[in-house]
Length: 334
Image (cartoon, rainbow, N blue to C red; front, side, top):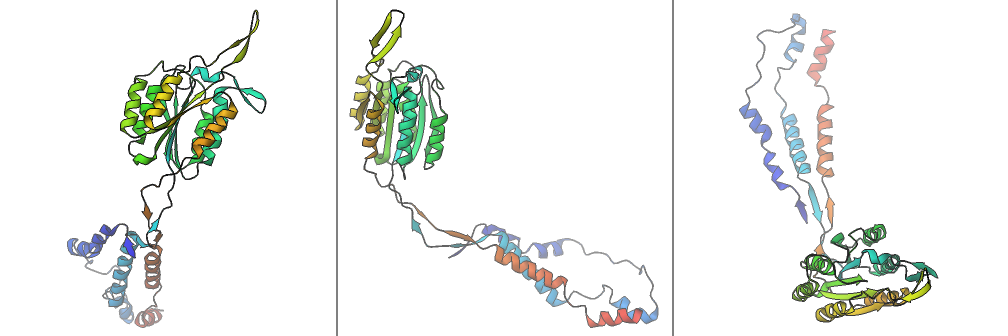
């Protein structure tokens, strides 16, 4: 069907008529600036005193109408088409506190930090989530939304790759991260609100109590999958030799388990990169929930048709043949 993007511009159609009515007519000079011999009286009579031909007025009206029509942006709207939507709204909340720099993970036989392992494995997870809206939150002493929910997975990957340990602070504000995620997911359908939270520590910063954030998530139907990352044994070299320590002693597994259980999610423990990759593969198997059906109409702009026709009319009027009487008068003057 034909539609107009700016139909209100048609109110300008009578503008030339109003200008002609309101503005006073141009005054003619009392005498001619150039006196011509009697033999050239015909040329003097033809020098602008003749009225505007009717056909020229009609062309001017047609050209003005076409210009207004072009400015109103005529569009051809195609048939409504349903958008294919099968994905979920996934927010990734990644711990970027100081302890995430601990190098107790391995990739390809080389030691890497916990955050480096998250970048590699979560990046692959994001790359596979075709059709999902993905958002990214990083948290430390504060929680920040790096990327809002978007289908642009490349941007999310870039933001994750550019983030660094300590960027949001050295401590861990789990409650603030969950509260921020709940706020961002409120506007989405209830069956699509999913948060994947990854941390290696205990809540020791922030304004929102983590157990209060659980209540908020339950009230807003946000499902939370929690991942506790960090090895349970690590060799540390010291002055008196090497010794084995537990670098994940501060991990609050109780909080993460309760957070997942109360919201309908699941708590995972990632002691190495293999387990972390397996966890993301399991989450990747989530059954996608259908989004509310959205439709769109393909739009083709048609403004160039009336604009081209108006230019052709103007060109025709400018290049019209010189009247025979005026040609004869000019020849007599020569």
